[in-house]
Length: 315
Image (cartoon, rainbow, N blue to C red; front, side, top):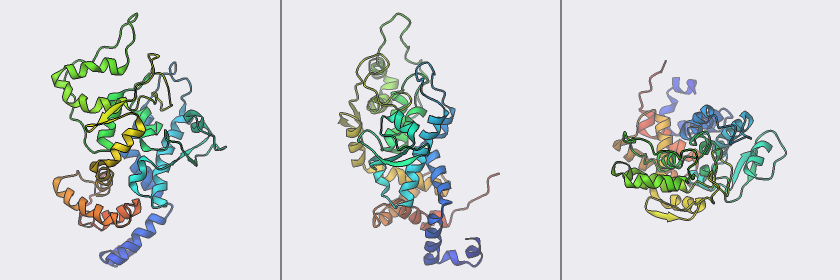
């Protein structure tokens, strides 16, 4: 690549395309998929999490590692096999070792190493991966608000504004009848300063309540009541996480969001209104190849935003 640059070959689109294809086919491209998925899904937050050992007795560092690897390996598979990026919500497969398969209640692949395995409806989607579900949870329970905000920010690129400076909703005191998050968070919509955002993010987070604080499936919540996974996203009701996924897939900002995240990662700049025009052209070009991940990357690199970017070394 350096030799090609010194010979001014990268200004030739045909030769630049050849270099892109060569580098994406190289095993070193796994560095990109690992780094990008870590930033996009905020997997670094998983490393900081210390789930309550009294509540989640099975959580350990082996599971933490398997959860992180799952997210990274799924994204890498999309690159190496040229899969449409829009299929991230319904790929039909995941990567798991025996430890993670047991945690998910799936058939073990018979290996300590993560293997590609087929999944059922409740697993395999980016939204059902235990990595981000754990990273957005409380030490001893889930946290629907964080999960709803994560989906709005990372899947739909519509992050909620910063929370107002108001006291948090009180947790039940000892001796009081425990309340579900849905019951407790009803207070959100009663406060004008909170209702605007929480009317949007809370119903999304409720849809993920079938997954506990470390991403395992559950039928009962922490109060012992059956989980209620009905919710609403961007004005559309859904019955469960599969219904929510179908709604998200129909939203135009889902397709543009993952492309925006890739564009921001590649150019190292904040996304602006001017970038929206370039991004639309990138998507149109990549759509001719089914929005495959490698096609999107190629379109971004061929764009003026990347080829004319002023990259400065960061010490």
